[in-house]
Length: 392
Ligand SMILES: Cc1ncc(COP(=O)(O)O)c(C=O)c1O
Ligand SMILES: C[C@H](O)[C@H](N)C(=O)O
Image (tube, rainbow, N blue to C red):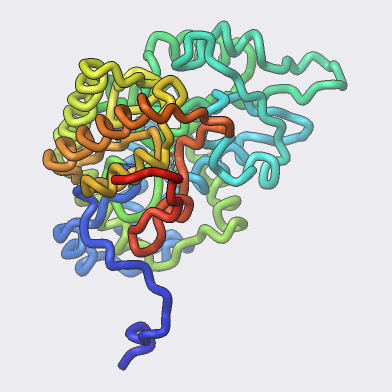
């Protein structure tokens, strides 16, 4: 009996399939093709740059983005944080981003701790994405005023909340950055989605941004990681910060080979399938007057829980009733979600919305777009929080 079979452990239930997991596109599971590919992966030590498949993955993604070099990071968080740290030199300085940006809201204060940076979080005046006017009216100029922390980097997200950043706006922002010596970073956790839907080549976004963090573990379906792309000098220094942060990966050939399976495939078709499901759900919401927070450009439907007076825990429990996993108002689609799950989430959403009509819920705390599974369903998949008087 191996230790792992020891019965007195508190192990999570086996995770079988992401077909009904609409909590996030991070739940995609490795395919059989990926696992088979891993069996034939190179086995060099990537810290010394000696692993063929890791180098192949880095150079493949860098080339797609039109950048000189790429760096395989274990996560999008690491990729973003070492990118921003690499762009920054002499504090005091600040990074300007959307107030919803993952680098600001969901990377455990990395900007404050690793980069010692002030953040200038900005609410987009159009409600969807920052315009050049939003940026110009909030950035901190480096004009010698010793009260401020001059803004050195703009960190934009594409997509953010599933919204595609309009290329023409990025072009305007880029021109202003060039005139004002400002660096542009892109959190491209879902840039594959933006490329597939907008048909703007990744290389064109690469011409706008000095660096892009490109996630492999979301809509691209890889089990692990992100590729940070940029010029060779920047990537060399980012590699230094990656090592410092404990991100040096030894024999990463296996996970690189797994990622290459989808990167080398018709990934756009896969991604557009997931977008079609999201667009279908958005149309369903419109027909049933279920309010949404933002346009459904790509793979996310954001239910406006406040406007709907919907208790997120009721929505999660309705999801369990109809065998779909949810974690709040963001409903995520990825290429492994089944059409049956689309039908089921419509049922769950409709019942939660009807329940809210009779039992309006006032969200008096912050709206948590993402909530870790532990806050609503336990390791055995049962909803933790009972809601007074709530019956299935
Ligand atoms: C927009 C965005 N950026 C970055 C990340 C960080 O990626 P990871 O979870 O791999 O650290 C995420 C989360 O998946 C994300 O949603
Ligand atoms: C928020 C969480 O870190 C992950 N980025 C997600 O989108 O689910």
